[in-house]
Length: 147
Image 1: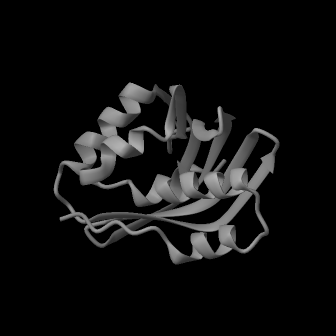
Image 2: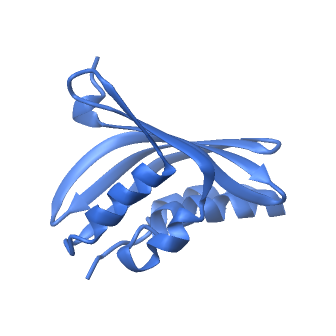
Image 3: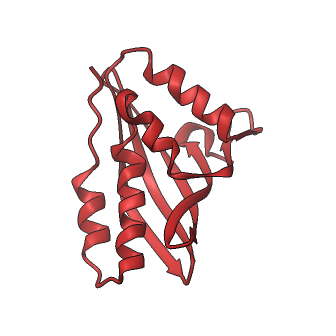
């Protein structure tokens, strides 16, 4: 059984500021990005992304890997299907909203069978017809984030 929980720190940081309905919906998507990242809710997790979503990640050798939604989702599906105890948490969360555009910067901690890996991520979101959707994700594990 996968053990995935949305971090209390992230909720505290994003819930502290006064908000509009759009801000509340944005905070919900950010919370769901971590909270729905489980084998049993992965199809709902996919619904957080625009169909044209892209992801870029840095590699230790200095290269960058890019994937579309189908490639990224397929990789997550295979990873979570392993049955290992996997949990992702966000720390030091910073959300900035400018109208119908938003960015989220955070440190992430991925725990896989007790082994912790740390890194940085950035989500870009756009509000479409009242719904916040993730346009793109960039991330780097700390060991692959060194110049």
